[in-house]
Amino acid sequence: MQFPQMATVKQLFSTDVVDDPIAAVKEQLQQAGLNSHINPGARIAVSSGSRGIANIPAISRTVVDCIKEAGGHPFILPAMGSHGGASPEGQKEVLASYGITEESMGVPVEATMDVVQVDQLEDGTPVLLNRLALEADGVVLINRIKPHTSFRGTFESGLMKMMTIGLGSHKGATMAHAQGAQGLARLIPAWGKVILDKAPIAMGLAIIENAYDQTARVIALRPEEFEHEEPKLLEDARAAMPRILVQGIDLLIVDQIGKDISGTCMDTNIIGRMMLPGVKEPDEPGVARIFVRRLSDTTHGNANGVGLSDVITKQLFDSIDFEATYANAFTSTFLNRAYIPIIKADDREAIASMFEVLRIDDGATARVARIINTIDVEHIQLSESLARTSDHPDLTQVGEFGDMCFDADGALV
Image (tube, rainbow, N blue to C red; front, side, top):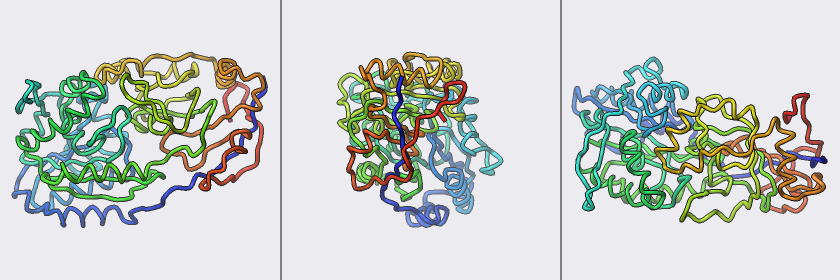
């Protein structure tokens, strides 16, 4: 089997960045009036999620320190639905992998799966909230605003979702996802309105990242600002997202996937594949087949989203923690995203099998793109046929074309 020659290209995106995230967080919290929302001695929960976010240990510690300076007694509260195996211990382990621990934050990390029903919607749907959040004197949310990987709505990933699905813990997240992708778009604002009225939400710190996984903006919002300001921030985040700038890809090779990279282990907005009933497939970048090589070290074996690919290696399969993966899949109800794709012994066999499926007789002519993961797409590799026919002004070739090389074990190098 012939394989195409590949070259490294650089993709250019907006470089807006916060030079000093710590100073920016302090300034935003002060402008939003954090001190006036915290009484001396108040017990304040600081939410922390399961997504990889740039500078999140420093940002979280700064929020904690600002609450202390205001006279409050903060603690870190995982707000990640059923992630981390849907257990308090698992969620603490997820936070620790991001550098968020009792030692690094200087405050306790407390976790529970217990929820309390604070109200119900007009249709009788219960509104659930993590018990520790409800018992606190105040809750400060910290989350990145970004397009969701499973649905489109006024609110997607962000403060409202963390407050509803994240702090709904395993039971609330399961209930929300049971209504499908369209149900999430409806429930998040409906639940959010109730929780803002019934729960001690003190403030939210919204983070927008640029395409290079850097902090582009931090914005502190008072609870009364969530409903009208977060949708604007979502559109800003959508415009700032990275993407693959070439079109018409026969085979996309993804070196690693993981929960630290995306809720679906690889961002559906980047790969252009949703695979959900009733949700329109993205038009870009037009990928025919996807090969995923490995799980990231910090995904803890959670391979939710692996079913978005067409072929994986035996090495990836052997590293899957099925208990964690299935807990995530059952909560989301998007079971097909956890289905196991075709398994091949190594990278060489996996790529060759996709060329066979695509009926590409001469692999040297295949339109192939290779990325590290769906966060790091500044530098990607393109096959010669794909690069030669792509004239995007923000693409620059930075390496010579060379053979697609494999080591003695058949792994790409």
